Amino acid sequence: MKKSTTIIILLIIVLAFGGSMFYLYSKNAEDPVVYQTEEPSKQTIIKKTMATGSILPLEEVLIKPNISGVIEKIFVEGGDYVKSGDLLCTIKVVPNLSSLNDARNNINEAKINLDDQLRNLDRQKGLFTKGVISKVDLERAQLSYDQSKQSYAAANKRYDIVKTGTTSGFGNAANTQIRATVSGMVLEVPVEVGNQVIESNNFNEGTTIAAIADVDKMIFEGKVDESEVGKIKENLPLEITVGAIEDKVFDAVLDYIAPKGNEENGAIQFEIKGTLKKQDSVFIRAGLSANASIILARADSVLAVKEALVQFDVKTKKPFVEIATGDQEFERRDIELGISDGIHVQINSGIKEGDKIKVWNEVVPDELAENE
Image 1 (cartoon, rainbow, N blue to C red):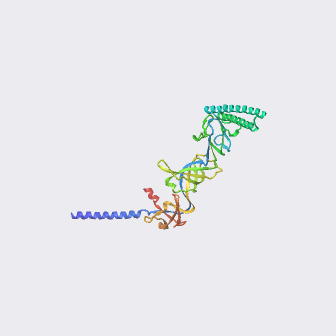
Image 2: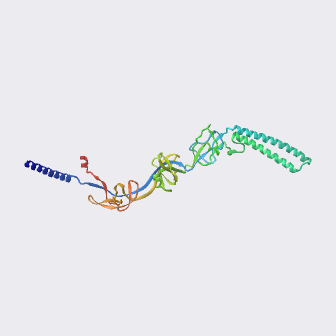
Image 3: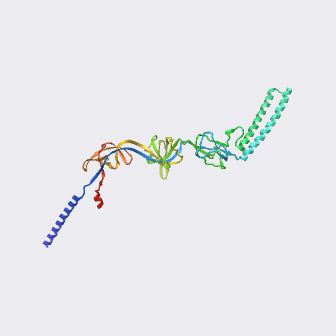
């Protein structure tokens, strides 16, 4: 019994010793951990936030008629350039029967009064010839007749205006001739010949005949999320990219941030506007969708490293990197960071060009990787 126990103990000792030796051999046989290094480089770092929107004219004027009727002729189309006063279209008036009847009655009343004043004038002339009345009474009769004559002519013109929208002597001032009020490009003509239009008045904004704008003055109008609006301010530069125009960036300046946000799809959005700098070589159509990069900060040709190389002290939370001092030997170097674009970060102090910075991730040798 004792002999068996002794043998078992000896076997356990031998196995333990053998296992220890195998473990030590395996550790010695492992390839050493190898860390790669990277050097800092000169970079232009741009910190920015994005906004989506569209390109719109700075000022868009809607042309509306001063009289109701039916479109008779249209002289322009979208894309045409017009000057202030150019004829856009003509309107055929469909007279209101009630107004037409009132205008006709006014003519009849004015004619009756004119005939009465003519008879009175003839009578006064006869009396003046006989010396019964003074010259003053005759002049009063003449004045009353002239006033009645003027009223009769005005009643006839009023009738013509109600019936046709214009009258003799008005020329370009006719309400049936719709003219441009500003110079610029015709963006759209939303009416066609035969369409009925409504005049612009206190109770109705009227039918839009045409939209005119100066396409040399365009703006970006978009929206930013409430989480980003606190980072931006007026006069910041914008870089506008238009989906329909490839490989082209348009410069702009942020000149408006809405003081109040609106809820859209559960998030608060703030409207922003930026004026585009004039582009002589590229025509930007109104209404194109666009994205704006709002430049929050910019650093040109500064020393920078990849953000992935920066470590942070567990206790102090201060940034540092590990600099190579020899073959796979590194020392900690505290650094001061500047702006970041999410990939590279500016280095204000702590390292210089040529320093080799340790890459955190271990590099597995090719042979070991193949075996795995």
